[in-house]
Amino acid sequence: MAGRERMRLSDATIARLHPREREYTVWDTRTPGLGVRVRPSGATTFVLLRKTDGRTMRRSLGTVASRSVDEARRQCHALLATPDTEPARRRARSAPRFRDFVASTWKDAHFPRYKPSTRAGVNAALTSQLLPAFGATPLDRITRNQVLRWFDAYSRTAPGGANHALRILRRVLEFAISQGHLGTNPARDVIMNRRTALTRFLSRDEVRRLHRVLDRHVRTGTRHAHQADIIRLLLLTGCRRGEILALRWNEVDGDTLALEEAKTGPRKVYLSVPARRIIERQPRSESPFVFPSPRRPEHPHGPHLPLWDRVRREAAIEDVRLHDLRHTMASQAVMNGVPVPVVSRLLGHRNVRTTLRYAHLADRDIECAAERVGEALARAMALD
Image (cartoon, rainbow, N blue to C red; front, side, top):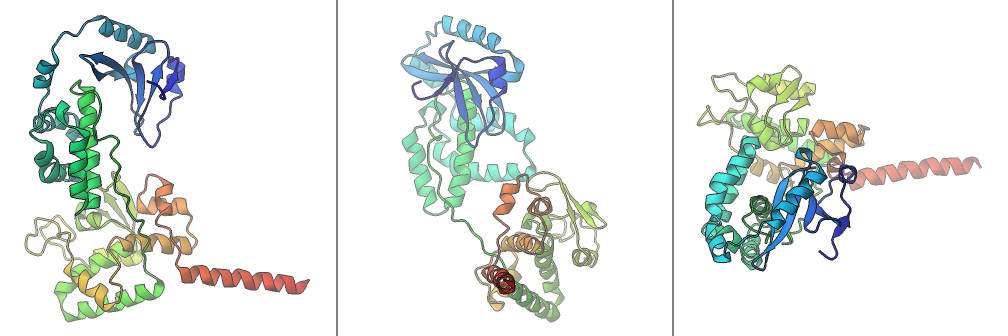
């Protein structure tokens, strides 16, 4: 365990361990093989490293909250004193296949606490990528090279999707370690694809052009009004596309939206007067959704908005994504003097640092600010 963090573990020192961006383990200097694993979520677990048949196996001993460090040491000594005589080939046969482990043990432990949207995303990654690549392989036969080959191939067509699927694979294999099926996570050190930071948002002139084009399309037929209102509401509220498309009437409460399935959990969205007017003019029907699917009203509007592709071309903003409307709302709030912590609440962020990525200022606005500051200083210097 050279190069790893080590200290004499006690209940007091363990209580002072704080989560970091990445999982880490602190090893006990008193009991060989005993450590405390700290996850980014704050979950803290006793673990034991044990060599069996030339292989190093990691075993979870339970959460820190469930036992003291002395109890963990006694458990550790008892396990180390018990010889493991099971042959390696028999243990290899007993390790479940990836697909069987995911379908039973892993899903039983994780899916109950996932939101429906999270379950759908995980199932999609499993069905399209992870099960075809690793499903028939026993957990302890999955190698780092196998993971790298799969990840590199998927990254060539969908780098973002590859990152998402890799995170799920890591979680599955970490849980398999805690269940004693393998010793190390072959996906842990695979480097994710670097994503380019997107800072595009609309200037005031682009916002005006966008609304003029939307107005023109609405005048040509009512079938466009539905999508135009969705686009405008995204800009006015800063909501994510899925939050507006899946908005239900029972989530509308006067001048607020009580979103039940937001990305960061249930949250409240405060509506401006223009945003309230958009919602109030939506026709009521038997559908539970404010923006139902035109063909299947019992379902929400689909994720694709054909009008958006036409509008952004005609407004000369082809490089703008729907999500950039959220960026625009955040930037306009900052430029109009709204403090970043308040903008963070408006957007439903858990962490203010996330908001700082959205609160960009247009070059022209910075230029104007520099001119105002320069003029003020020039006047001050003239007084001298």
